[in-house]
Length: 241
Image 1 (cartoon, rainbow, N blue to C red):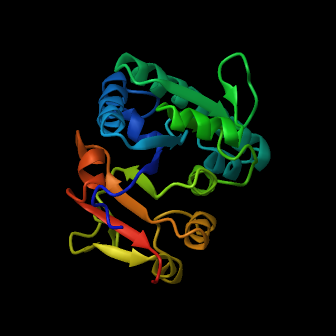
Image 2: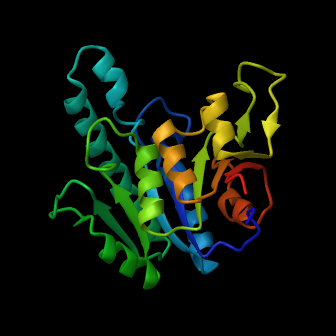
Image 3: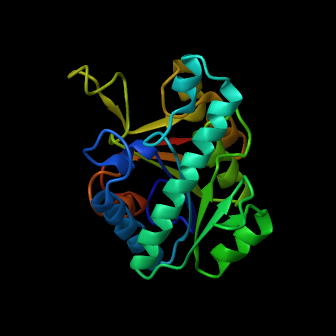
């Protein structure tokens, strides 16, 4: 499968930074609403959809840990930031009449449901969008790894990574004007070349479970559905076979 509309169940990973819009931190309501509208288009197409959202727009655990805070505490604070983003996305999606559930790996029953795999599967089977919050619930794991884990647990056909860049490049396209975009790569290519698609644990999980990764820019309206249909600009990372 190569992004041609043949995916039935998809996990969309959104970085927290994307939700900032043009701001330096926090949430940009217009950006959140635009992304919610894009997700609504995918939902209306009949694809079963779940999401993992980062928290870097509110709190970056790794960088704070590097400044002296205990890593585990910093990571837990980062996980709580993802819950805030998930609730914001849920509110925006419901504004577009998309039934949505937030499931958190850290139980906080006052604001969302605890993550239970079978419950999450049932929500998607009933046509609800599921947002997985609080990462894996463990420190030392990124939200990229959480996305790969949930995509594996949910038996997803594809993991879409929505970023600020429209694919994987030979170098940082913002710094190197000669950088070229890959159309396709294998999971092994990414690991061997140390390409910054996702961290090694996430790539390995996707490789072991034969889950393709589509890297694209989520900053252009409607791009999620276009990429799912094999249009637009993206890089696909898949198995060697």
